[in-house]
Amino acid sequence: MIKHIFKWAMLVFGILILILVIATILYMNLSPQFGGNHSKEDKARYETSGHYADGKFQNLMPTSLDYSLKGILNMTRAFIKGNPNKSPKSDLPQEQLDTTEWNTHFDDQLMWFGHSAFLLKLNGKNILLDPMLGRSPAPHPTLGTSRYADSLPIEIDALPEIDLVLISHDHYDHLDYGSILKLKEKTKKFYVPLGVGAHLRAWGVAESKIREFNWWDETDLEGIDLAFTPARHFSGRKLGNNYSTLWGAWVLRTASTRLFFSGDSGYGEHFKEIGEKYGPFDLALMECGQYNVNWPEIHMMPEETAQAAKDVRASVMMPIHWGAFTLALHDWNEPPARSFAKAKELGVQMITPVIGDVLALEALPAAVEPWWR
Image 1 (tube, rainbow, N blue to C red):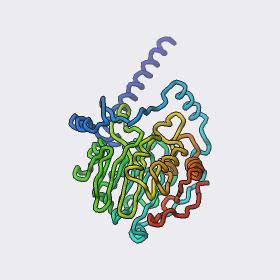
Image 2: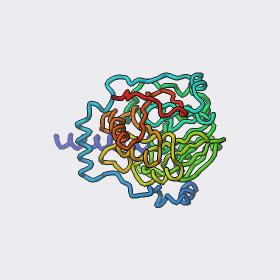
Image 3: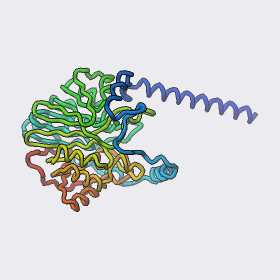
Image 4: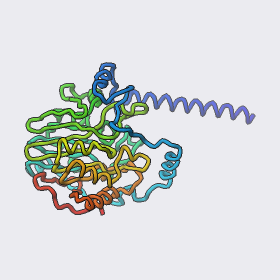
């Protein structure tokens, strides 16, 4: 009798596992959050980039995650232990903004949403950088952490008309399905890395609005010179498609202002090359957060962030990729604290504006209090 019950229990368990597997496969293939697929013609185009081989985009230097047994065990122990300071204990300071204020502040200006998302006005153009403005950087809220704040400095519906959206890569904390749906009708152009156009097309963005970029590609947007430059990272939005689209950083230059937006990157010689080719920069927005000793080659440690800012020849650096989500095990405010100490040692000016505060680019460096302490 017991043996018979055990057989039936195992059968039911197996059926449930099979249903779960089928449901997962269907969700990943049918849910639009995972983005578009790449045709044979797309892949043939990627192969001409010089950075694509064996069906994957490649970094300029050997780059990997630590998938060793020791690394996995260390990560598992750390996640089980947790960190009581990985998220703020209270609401972070945040300024509120409306379109009228944005239009009347300064000629060239910048506003941070937290993490890596920015609203930029440059040469009369409104530009969004990595506008992940959703609640959770995941294909479904139950699969990811929530944004620290319940609201944004300015909601998407209240944004002015956007001339250009710049995307650094297709990870969920930089490219958000829900945000793109709300932005696609009020945005004139989307400049994205090679392969990311497939996601936008799948989400209903008009082909005429999309332009894909290879590393070192340059263009001009009515007085703004733009270049897409290398980073040391990876990409992918679902299981099995890591490295399926390109990743990188953006350079923006006008007659009066030079900006560098790092996207996500591990440290490498590419920063010096970018600085030599396009620097010096008035302001470098530098990735600094969500790092771990198990993935040091795809995210910089805070001290490396300060060094990278010096490498690109930045007069002022701003640490980004923190302040909105918890995606690693370090204290939520450890990134600016550590990078601030190293920047001071290197003689690099660092700023940390409050989320929602509008900075005049012609007045940098701004006097910014270390509110994160």
